[in-house]
Length: 408
Image (cartoon, rainbow, N blue to C red; front, side):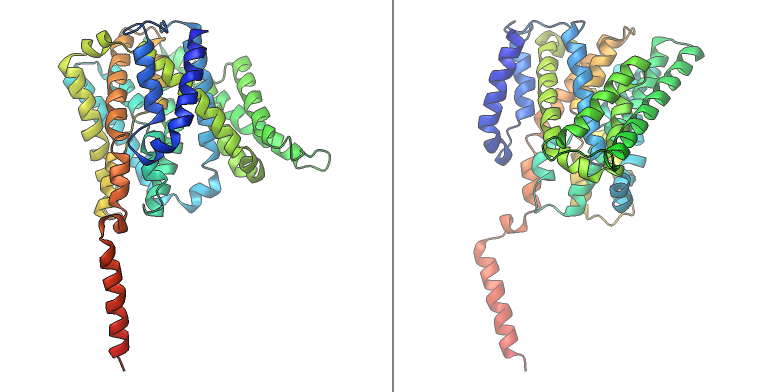
């Protein structure tokens, strides 16, 4: 009940300051994370939570399912075909290169084993657009850059998921039998994620059924709940099923996607903020101090080396300007997907679970501080009018008119 009270009060505060946050370096997501840290056992002890609590695993599962479902809806096959060239570089080259460079830093700086290092790299490879909202939402930023970051952040959560699951299964020390079971779990998840929404959309568009305007937004809700329930019953991978279901709805049900879009984003945002509050409550000053200087050095390298190097290599020969490439290199904020993947590892029982979670935690904390405080600054760098004195534009127009009057 205390957790619910804290979440409700923070949600109201987030609503009240949301307009200010959109114009400044403030971040509502960072608010929930910091509040969780302050209210958790490590500081005030108002919201006592442990990694093994049922509320932690249940909330993390529901939140990631909702986020992946709505993320998938942003990237139907038509959208991907029409704007795949630049996001394809970031996802096809940037994502695996970020994973590899992060794993190298984890192994050589912190001393993790190779499997645990690769697992950590997969957890920290996805990006979260929430902490770069000023950049993605600023119309002064070139449309191709905003589209690139939107598509990349919408897809990379789902693409990183199989790597997380496979490396985690190997880290548990499982044999081929378990890996075969994991393959079955992933396959069943994909099958459910594609078949359920496709069949539901076909039924709704047939002559026997039709959704009223009032119930239309609930169509995608019903699809998502059915995918979730079937995934639970069949032990299919819920997260891969959610991502595939979102893509299927976006591909075959444009009307269903449009009617659900705003409603779905609000549901996902509520669950995401609640999960960030819980994640913050699990972080304590003792945890942040226990990683040592090697852990903090790793976090810095994961942010200022891994992603920038991977993106720089990925966009060699592209038509992006130097300023655009620099913006993409920097804006690889670690956010919600990494939070939940970290919680999954913490509950997995592997020998390095606590150490991996600590490294995930300090990297996300540092990322939120750095990225949410620089998105407005970088976005303004694309606003030429912001940097140019008002008199310059007027003088340029007068000079143009005078030149036109002198010409024969």
